[in-house]
Image (tube, rainbow, N blue to C red; front, side, top):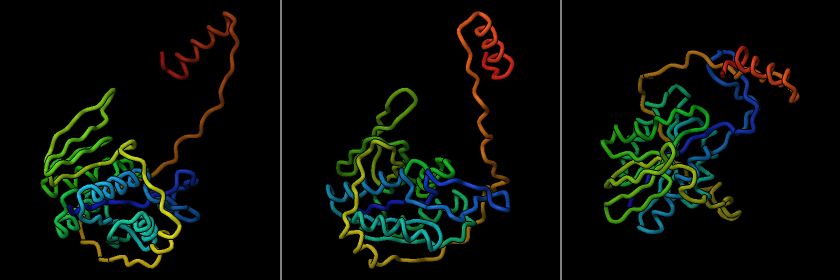
Length: 248
């Protein structure tokens, strides 16, 4: 089974974000970048499929030189091959999906797994776009996966419950938290990963279909108000909820 896992590099959730001078991107100075958390579930699921069905797990990311760090993390987790598609940051979600689809075609991937979303843009677009470009079934928000032969059974999270989906290989899976428990790389594997080869290639030039017009930080939280339990306090609370918060 040929398994391809698409991963991305994102700012650490504890990093303080500042808007760049162009007003359209973040200021990367001092920002710590990490492997997208949802992609950890994607890598782990790829490795488990390999352990059960045999084959190989390849990981691919689209980005600059610094993105090699997350590929090293994947190699330390014992994936077989790491690919960096070099891009200077000009690609939108469709452009990234196109690069992943090209690699999937090249290796004749039976399964393509990505995290359900990246925690920076939160677009949920790449997985379904890859599936459309490859003309494959797409199962998003996957929290349980079983593959028998060419048959796929997956459980996905929906509003207020779970949904069971049946499909067939090849297919694209978007991994949700709860799909598995990602393994922690062992120190010897981390050290070995530093010297393992990473295949590099230039990104295909694809016109952007979307444009970031501007970025804005969320407004600062206002000061809270503490009221008592007298009739006057209750009346004031109702007035505030109606006139300021506008929730009633």
